[in-house]
Image 1 (tube, rainbow, N blue to C red):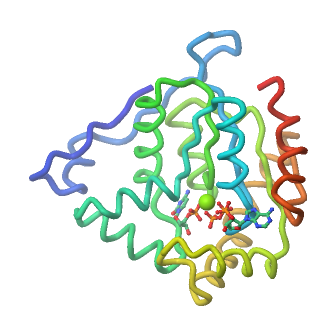
Image 2: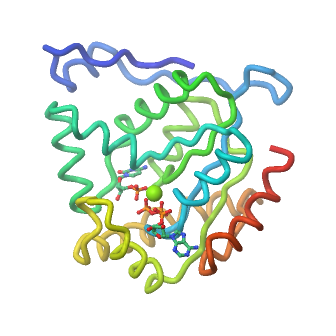
Length: 219
Ligand SMILES: Nc1ncnc2c1ncn2[C@@H]1O[C@H](COP(=O)(O)OP(=O)(O)OP(=O)(O)O)[C@@H](O)[C@H]1O
Ligand SMILES: Nc1ccn([C@H]2C[C@H](O)[C@@H](COP(=O)(O)O)O2)c(=O)n1
Ligand SMILES: [Mg+2]
């Protein structure tokens, strides 16, 4: 896997991207290649329980959990102009350009030393999906889709209390719109390929997990 070097301290992100050139395409690895990375995308609306269920899977199966949102939130604290752009976009419930998120994901995958990954909250739109598959050569083994009514997700997000800049009613409503308009088409894309495991997430977390864990017995 090719990983873009982080921009050096004195180099603006745009200039660094120009120096690095366009992202390279990576051919997919054969199914029986022991170095092949295996990925499950964990998708669902804001507050559907992606992080909660992923944490349990890490505990039981030792897979690596990469939350795109967590990586972006760490990046926004970098103090760089790109970090400020990410902060502004998250506060507005918008989706950050793919090249930023994919380079964070690729670096985290390489640094993890693992080969089985839960990628949580990614891909969020068609651009995320197509760019990731092209640049990494990775298609997901399957997609976990946590299906949950908006009013339940809204209640959970307003009660989360983790100090997130996007857990306020104004941004939550924007995030719901973005989920329906941009993220649902990605779930439909994988559904047409027979890769989506839909989980009813409007149940106690323990009950949801009982169903989720069965899918990982052969992962
Ligand atoms: N099944 C559940 N029942 C009740 N509360 C839940 C359930 N799953 C998660 N929660 C709670 O709901 C809140 C949101 O859960 P979580 O952070 O896992 O969602 P998420 O899908 O990762 O959201 P986001 O997309 O905003 O990161 C948390 O406070 C969590 O404790
Ligand atoms: N692929 C992604 C994932 C996340 N973001 C931004 C926009 C989201 O509203 C925010 C929070 O993500 P979450 O923690 O809810 O998964 O992060 C993005 O732009 N692209
Ligand atoms: Mg989350």
